[in-house]
Image (tube, rainbow, N blue to C red; front, side, top):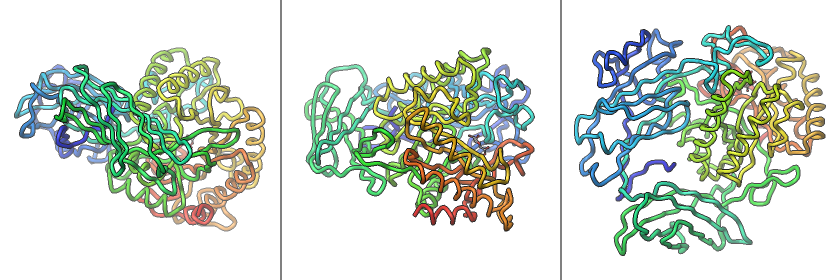
Length: 575
Ligand code: BDP
């Protein structure tokens, strides 16, 4: 799925701004024809979560209606062009109407979906209405309101408010831009780029998808080089002599331009930044361009005051600046796909990304399991198709911490692993676990990813004992699976400004000390290829007894991005 862009052959308009919003706790909107347009809306910012924009609706997750109006830009013509509406992310469920015509619906909060609106759009006065809701249900992914039952879940989270089966606030709304875009009728619809290295040359294999029609000429070129190819088919190979490879120290990107032409007349163009690089696992190592890499970085969240999970470009820039400052080279998109803007900057700034689907909090009760698998398949497919061309993506994570001790878990993940590999055979696939050695799904993963909090949730307050048990566990895990290991989560809550010597839980000294003790263990194991601290920043979550002020305080930065002691300690260790 190509991100919309503007050039002489295609145009894209961002519908972000102040829309109208009506909360609908009594579910009267459908019967009252709000889908055809409604009155008495209050202004709401798009993109942003609705929860923190008002004084009284923070925990409300139910039916909510959004509306905006738009005219087509000058020169757009629905009889000659494809005109589409693209939603980059709406959490959790969206149903969309244009001028009273139902366009369709989408489930899942972090991946794009779009509609062809050419048959329904008018030159002026279009009314776009979206019904959004994010109710927590056991047969949704991620799930919520899961009945307390120790066979399925480690801890019941139904006491949390809101009752999510995951540890982040279930923000709702239109979280990323809504784009209106036009392309020619016979347009480039997708590109798949796979790169390789042969000596000093880079090999770029491109597969083109295009609308049905005559076999026009496709031209491929890399800007700033003489490298080009053309074909009336859909496959091209570009060989780049003395290629500048993409790496974290030197994230070189080439602009791949693809054009379609009839004779001398070009009628479509798309430009995609690409990086030439290879990723592979060899023995205990993860290799980029044939050389071992070690991941230093974080699990994170898209989370910021007031905007909630909504896209704030300045926060993205700040986060990369702080990750550079601290010496990180990577992150995992915990626990859902991040914005395209975040991914684009990872390419530009040279960050390695473990790209995760929204499959968090999975449990394996029979009831609803088929539906949860279906959703995970949908998300895996949508994610890999969206992000397959990013050089920064070095692995796919198909789940975070599933409660996977029932026998149905293993085939569930084997199915998702196979699906992922069938779309992209070039990258390692993994999932992360708290279960440890008993996580049988590691058999079908390329990497073993462990989340561990010994010294915090267990052996509480004992940094050295926690580190010792981590050490023993890593050895046993490696002995069993013989695969490279990443510690994808470790850390401790720290209330900013709280101090103690000797360190005590919730102080900045305890957090810094336990992170440093873990890192010392990790560096002593040759099969460990990465360390991701949980979390980069403090983040909002459901209210619960362990969550002071509805916050998870495991950030090494505060929610407004100020470093705690642990951030300075990490900077010494990572730079
Ligand atoms: C892990 C989860 C993560 C939580 C973290 C914690 O993967 O989402 O926020 O623990 O408890 O189990 O802080």
